[in-house]
Picture 1: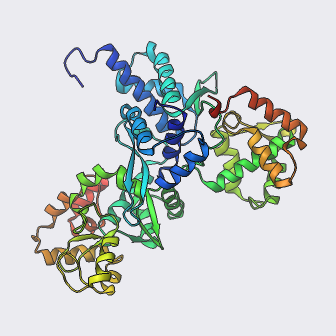
Picture 2 (picture 1 turned 90 degrees about the vertical axis):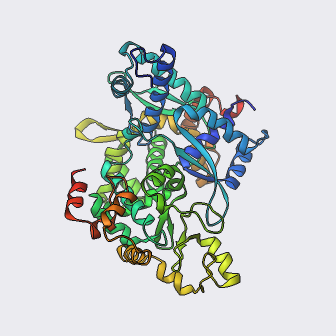
Length: 279
Length: 221
């Protein structure tokens, strides 16, 4: 099928929404182009060919909790051109990065609304603006609200894939059951293996054990893991893993030099803190 | 990138410049603030070594890519300063609201534009606040919402805020609203709300349908 208005319409829709479920895509396209036969995968393939020189892409991905297929629009480039964007100030972007870091270094990969808002101060964003920003980022699928907690949104998961791999490689483990990246999940309190919330539920409902090390599973494990204090969690994790006492090595390994996590604030020396402020 | 004395072939470098021009425009487009020609030129000159005399060509080619790939087009909005906005190339009534937009703000904007359209003339500032308050879209002394109309929407070229006689300010449709929002869409919302046909408002109906005749709907292509 040659590139046509249906491609352009689909591209504009996914680009402006950020995320569009496969099901909704089918519905919208059938309604808007009733005379046209189409296959979404083919449409997306054609679009991506056109988008390649523009460093953009539509990815068809499975959402971790529902396993539903979704179309996600991602910007592939992170360069001098993308940095000219004027939707968000650099302070606001810093705040977003801080949120991502905090979420990714929490065991359950979720933070409470209060934690999220308090982090605004670190990013030089007014607390009053923080609420509005969180709302905007949820709407744009960069964050996801789960109950009163915030998790990483589907769009950020895929758009920031490289960022996560480069800056926190041990923060994006693969699920011990299905081997996909875990963004909605837990680390086993027994052996620290990562697992999807969904995969864990399916297994523990039947076997009442953690699938990785077969330790007994209790609901209370999850309650404790949910939004535990960050430094507390990591500190205890280090102890169980027998980490070397020289903490600064590990912190350098975890993040890029200009992003700092709460953990570094707690545990590293004043000199590192000063380094952050000058960046 | 070839770092020896002879970098790109002319073709390669012009393709790169055009693609980067498109990318720059798309990056700027999200805020809806008009893109200055001189900003585009500076970005391409400084970062991609695009020669000044080719900038106009590059922008024309970038516009073609926007039309071909996205179905968008560039529209020049200010002959003096040379600014552009990105709008649909052909009218499309099926578009969904972008998540970049705040739905509350959108409601406010559409209400303001509808009020001006149905009034058939520029609307006095106080009259606008009264209308929006009665429509329960804002509280009477809501400074934030007023700022939204007076500053944000005018900057984005959805509205014009003009000084009239006796130092009164008026609201009018901005150029972006003319390009983006089909009047027949507003009229059909009104006719739904009042349970009448859209031709109930004769003057507005003529305006709306003469616009429609000028642009072809996407389906007909």
